[in-house]
Image 1 (cartoon, one colour):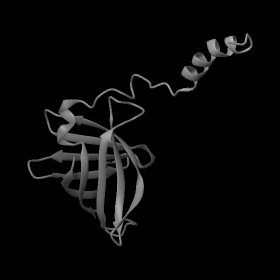
Image 2 (cartoon, one colour):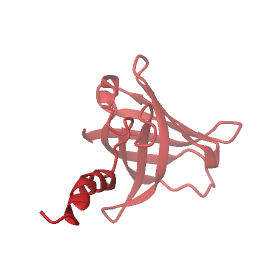
Image 3 (cartoon, helix red, strand yellow):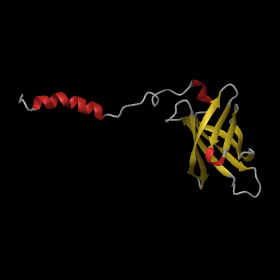
Image 4 (tube, one colour):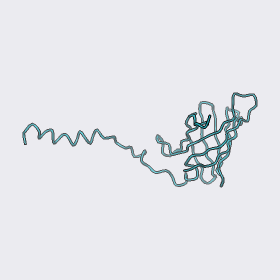
Length: 146
């Protein structure tokens, strides 16, 4: 083997290994078993509770999954369904109290708190906004798959 190739052959495996993306330990952690009740896709209605507000009743679609950036939290991806197509509305960070079967998500921009109660047949609850915690929306969902 020519002498000029030997150093390259020694360095090449190091370069290749360093070029591979390194998985963070948090990104690979498994979802908590107690989350099985809420992880999945949920669909239903999100209706307005405040008259004369900019709120509109919506067909809702929510995907609940383990948060990639914080695996100790859940993430709710929110969509409204318009003309049978989901329109992304935003993400929320959530916690699930499995003993009480309550999913709580926060929307810091609106000082909003989502409180959803898991039942045998679905999930229902409210969105409250503002420091006065006004009930702004009522939500009723059925699990589609998970």
